Length: 449
Image 1 (cartoon, helix red, strand yellow):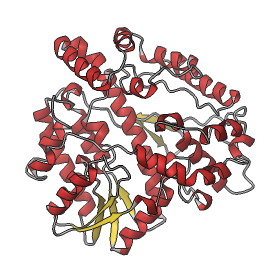
Image 2 (tube, rainbow, N blue to C red):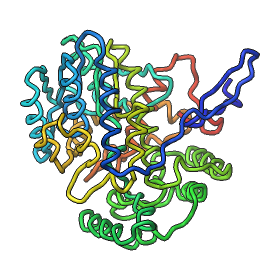
Image 3 (cartoon, helix red, strand yellow):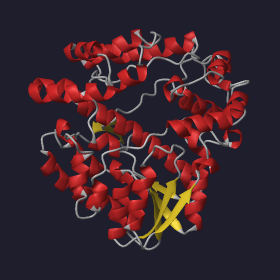
């Protein structure tokens, strides 16, 4: 029934006329990143205030994440300033070296009128509750990894009267600059870009040659896509995690997981090749802006799915950083000015000055959650193995369950070895949530869950 149906492009809308004719029309254009950080901070502040105000309008209690990071912390102080009855939620960290709790405590001490809830992650570990998980969304999503956490969050917040929950998704994408911005920056400000490159190299200790090679690569977006299609099964480079973090290409050309079947690989390859041959254009001329927009679009899709899930629990889910006004204000800032030596998220920090205490805005670190991955995998490995004992994805010809089981039983120094597990789990649980008479799609018929 879906033959001939094409997705609408990200910036387009579908118009259906009274006589049944349909056409697409562009409804949004990303701003040109031309403002200084100081100019942009003014617009960001106004847009964020309006976005949070739309969430706090009316009576009732709202809730919000308060991880200790600048994104969620800023939303909490904005909501409190606008007079909302606020409940904050923080998940305990499984890593003693993660300083998020320290900063979260500093924030809660400055929010005396709010109620604060702290929950142990042991109550809702990653990959918990997969056996009984159902997916009410119209497509699969990696959020299934956190299904148990979302259920617990909804119960804890609705028990305290919350009608809407704020989260800080989108802040990283909008107020930092991905390494690929250096490709554009070195052409406009070579001396400043070289200094930034040296600092980044010293921090991540990545090999220099791949970075130099990437900076010299002038391939347009379509040719980069074609090269990605050709390299889907290439062996990952050494120090893969660090090199991916320092990629200056149009995006990170990820390989297919080791458990993908040849049919699945070929299907993805053909789709990428078709996109490349169609002359598809990037989301923005600058690589850094394109990457920010791509991540924002993916984040928005994920938040939409989670909102569908939370609606079933009676709690609306909101991500103010992904509001149109906030996007436009943040993306109007010059990409390279979203970073500043010795400062973390300078545009957001300046926008929140006077609302968030200066001592909290001075944070220059960010929490890391590998410990949660390892703990969740260790605790729920048996459930994951059972999930993929006779998977529908294997019946559809998309995964090799023996290869996946071998990877699940292996040793993983960092989460990158299982970076595709969340998406695979999401697809499998989504298929199992469909009506029993619905046959799973196959790679050969063009269906890709």
